[in-house]
Image (cartoon, rainbow, N blue to C red; front, side, top):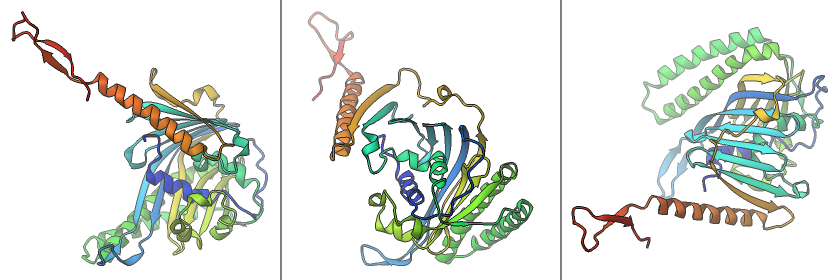
Length: 360
């Protein structure tokens, strides 16, 4: 189904969900300014480290390469509850607009909009609108309630710039050297160096913004974050094990309390999740009417409703959507069925009458 979120986005979501349910955290100072709105573009990078030498299904030994994926996103938010998220995981653009208990998703390649509405949302132990778990506005609310963690020293921007610039050059030389090697391990190291280079460049791009919008930098142990993970059922054991011994660090604007950068490390200390804004406007007096899905007028709309008091709501919602989409695809097929020639008595065979082909 076209409204299903691509696997790379799902992985991002389930890993980031671990950062939302915290039992204990040292509270950050209350921001002096209300977060009224923001509009920002940024990047997400997900890196799953290599497991080293593994045995394949056919019994052969091989080196697990791990993988790194990267995609862009845009978030637009108007207080208290209107959010637009646009992403391109795997090159497929996905736009989702959330307002209260309704979410609309538009995938241009599919050519239609899917609207999901939820009754009794307040009775759900877990919010079914998964896109909210990637929203910095969600983190802004959650972080105000945390009461344990480690607030790191203020950033020295000039020192960071110097260190990051030096690191970029080191990585450039390392990648050039590794490109000449023939050892498979060199390929893995080169891929890791490329991923780090991308993160360093992105961080340098954001540095000027942090100068004008100073941040609290706060760090949490992932094992503490996962203790009360309300969506743990969505996470496979492999995902939990991947980051359970790592840490997560948030960069949160002191003025508005908005997280603008998140970094989660895996058990081996490598960066597993990296997410930040590169172009961001905060409290620019956005009107809710300016935050729209962006689908062309006349785009086909499919609606479905779920009552969260029904334990079987998820299956029923999916069945309803599948039925609607199946009928839609059948209608499209009929509309595009090629015409077949039909010769009537008295007509020249050079001038046939065309009629739609019969559907089997």
